[in-house]
Structures are given as structure tokens and as C-alpha cells.
Length: 217
Image (cartoon, rainbow, N blue to C red; front, side, top):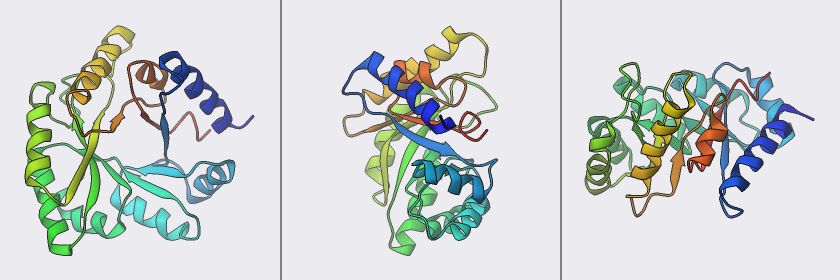
């Protein structure tokens, strides 16, 4: 079996533990992988890929332009890279980490006559090394962005699980994010879970996982 087959089996088992109706989308995080490795995973059936740097996304999009791939941006977005990212037209921006960033993206989108879909990043574990809004402010920020940024279509929320060994602490960070997601009536995506914790994230209600090392072996 391929690494993708093995991962899909694990996703399926975790998904069914929640509900037969619970759908989980897999985003293959290709930030440490080559264009050839992305093409190999495409050949196995994977279509959605995620990059952390705008220049890396641009490079791989150019190299793989003949493949019908869906590209996701999930890194820290610097203001001087916003225009370039908009031009690349990603399927989804996972890392809108503040109201100010959302408004900056919206202004550039308006100037270009474009719209993009995005997720609000929540720092559910209160870790200083991570971006995102706090759980306490998440609903208000989400609502404000939805009301004030007409060119940025917020589809839901994203979080990175707590960077600890204790599963209970990681689980709490996921449950916190899922509870916020359930307060957002128009949200459809709850993006939680990476290679080390995606099964736990799915059991906590994630419907989108971002996996890198477990796929690209």
C-alpha cells in the first residue's frame, strides 16, 4: 500500500468513529517536498496541496501547471506578499491570523476586483510561538471580518494543536476550536490536525486535516 492509502485508512477509521456522515478533506502539506514528489502523490489520487511560503507555492504551481491541483496557503502571510498570493489565486488561505491581516487582504482584493476564501486562525493553545486570535475573541473577530471584508469569504476556522506530549492538552485545544466553529452559523470548515495528531483532531470534529511528513516519506 502507498503512504496515501495508509493515511486514508487511518482517516476513514477516525471519521467513522465520529459518524458515517462525517466527511474529512485531506490537504497534503508539500512545503518540504519537491514538485516531483507532489506529482507522485497526485498520481496516487491526491489533489489538494498546501504550501507555507508564497514563493514556494508559485514555484510548484509553475512546475506542475499541467496538473489540475488545488493549492492551499497555510503559512504566516507577510503584508508584502499579499498581492503575489492573490495573483496565485489559492483555493483557500488557512492562516488569516488577525482582523488587521483580513482587512489588508480584503483591500488588496478589492483593488484587484477579486475574491478569495479563507479560514480564521485560532491560537487555541495560547502559545506565543503561534499566530492566531485567542479563543475568547474568535467569534467577534470572525463576525467582524464577515461583515467588513466583502471580498474575503471566511469559510471557517483553523488551529494548530498544542505543541505538547500530553494528548489531553492537545485534545482540549481541538475541542476549544470545534466549540467556536459550532457558534459560527455560516462556517463549513474546521481545519485541525497534522501528521502527529490528526486522528485525535478528527475525533474532536475536524473536517479538514493538513498532513505532510506522514504522506511524503
